[in-house]
Length: 143
Image (cartoon, rainbow, N blue to C red; front, side, top):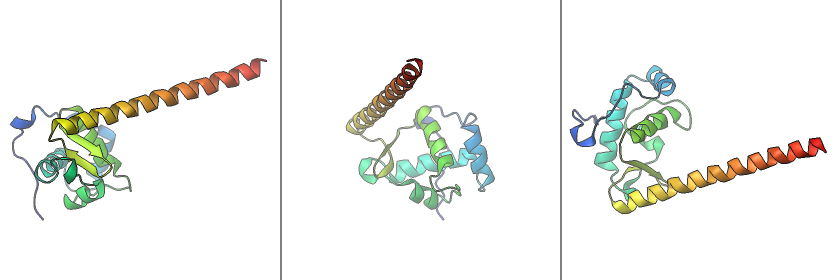
């Protein structure tokens, strides 16, 4: 199996492995032979080498299989948590219907930001509807 591991990260900016999502990182470490830092490095390398641009997106199951990451569960939540942390710390990782990819163009960045903004608006709408429903129930009990 090919090993996808960067030795240096200067071009990617500071990457803080020590604070990777602890509960998911622990579960992931218990279920495979790599430590979390090596998994993060392997994911970054894989995405940069094989998945630059939306047209080269990869689904999570293929990514974990290709990198021999033994993440139990159908949703691969431990691996997804590591990827979220990587995004939070400056990695240019995005997702689309086809999977995950490394952002390559300003148009992909724009689409990613627009998609995130839509998610945020959707959450705000749901929050509003839940609060309205709750308040309606309270009003019905008072009268």
